Image 1 (spheres, helix red, strand yellow):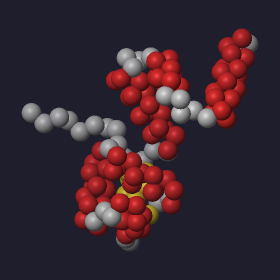
Image 2 (spheres, rainbow, N blue to C red; image 1 turned 60 degrees about the vertical axis):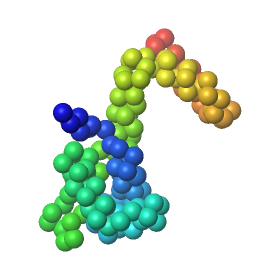
Image 3 (cartoon, rainbow, N blue to C red; image 1 turned 90 degrees about the vertical axis):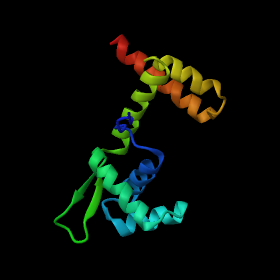
Length: 130
């Protein structure tokens, strides 16, 4: 039995969404130009991926415009938040702490990033004390 399609974007779908977030609402040719430059994607693949993404609700299409114009259905921030929540639920059994500890234990956070994390934690503590 085939697996139902995931509501989360695949890697290729994310590339298309990134292009749309960066360049704004665009026709297929403009999206393809961006993907082709990055990965050498064929035009037919771009069209097919946009069709799949339309069915999944990841993009919207303005059919009144000629050529049709595609736009992301959700913001970069909302998509990131949804994907992160899904990752936390699936991999870390709902524990954001486990995710953060794992991420920090990789040693890839720069001093500036660690300082920003400390600032955010201080800000969250201040809010909860009020």
